Every structure is written in structure tokens, then in C-alpha cells.
Image 1 (tube, rainbow, N blue to C red):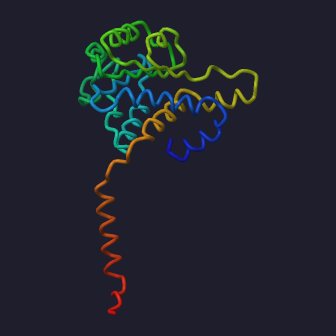
Image 2 (cartoon, rainbow, N blue to C red):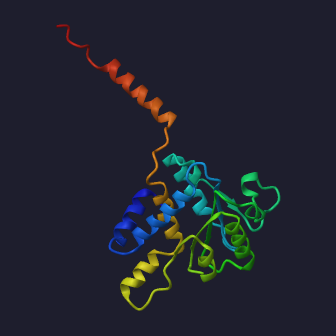
Image 3 (tube, one colour):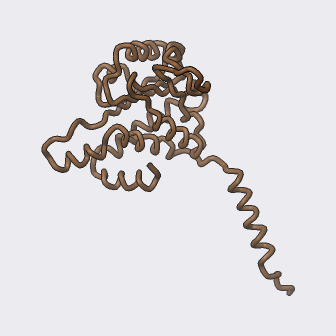
Length: 211
């Protein structure tokens, strides 16, 4: 979802709690992975890997000049032959501790094994954030949590909002908001093109008057 679609979605949601809620959660994420922190670990449930959020956060990290937003994806099962950055298993959570942030993203119940590891990470000093469907046990472990709205009620407006605000949509809003307050990273190619443009303008402009 690009910036234009995010802006349009925020316009649709204006007057609801969700624009502020996603920005607040993104602020918690950004604050917890501030420079000199221990990094961001991103994990889902056994049946759900948050690939898209990992990619969006990585993009936001590059664009905003906030490299600490780039996550390490932690996987429940690691097939053989995968590159190192795609081979981080649940054992990584055992080493999570003070200064690190663990972001749990799942549309379903996280399961006892994951909850136990999240509990250990928090006990060791890691900051725990949750983006989920409102699991009570996970929320009890999280320092901050944001849940997708439940299934729509009979109200038409509620139905429209709930349809737009599934967990995937919330992930887009959170990742976009997480990079908003960063300073865009310098881009060498753009600076090079800018220099070429200025040089071309100087070469094609008429000579200055000689009086």
C-alpha cells in the first residue's frame, strides 16, 4: 500500500479512533527501537508469518533514515537452504533481552509455545509489542498492543470500518506511521542527478550581461 492509499484510508477513517491509535502504536514502536537499542524482532504465529510487515518496515527504515526499524523476521520453521536473514528460528527469542523489541503479529491465537517465549523475552528485559486480533494472554504480556476490530455488528458504518480495518490494513497504517517522523535518507543517485541538472542549466543559460 503506497503513501497515497494510506492517506486516502486515513481520510476515510477521520473521526474514528483508528488514525490516532495506529499512530500511537507506531510511536511506541519507534521509541522502543530508538538508536543504540538492541534491534527489532518480528514474529508471527506458527501458521502466520508477517512477511509483508517485515518488507514494509524495511522500506520505511531505508526511506526515513531510521535503520533501527528494519526487523529481523523470526520463524517457527526454517526450511533448509535458506539465506541467513531468513533462517532465524524461535531460539532467537531466548536470547532477546534488555534493549531489544519483540513485535508479535498474528490474526489468531499465538499458541502456548510462542507465549512462553514471549514471556521469557519480557522477563529478560525486552520490550514486547503486539499487533493482533485481541488475544487476552498476549495483551497481558505486551507493553503496548493494538488489536484489529472484531467482526462487524449490524450497524452499516461499523461494517464498513471493520471491513477496511483487518489486520493487514492495520499493519500498513502502522508501518507508514512508524517512518513518518524520520528524516529521509540521502540518496546518492538523486544528488548526482541534481548536480547534472544544475550543470545542464548553467551550460544552456545565456551568458550574464557585461555591464
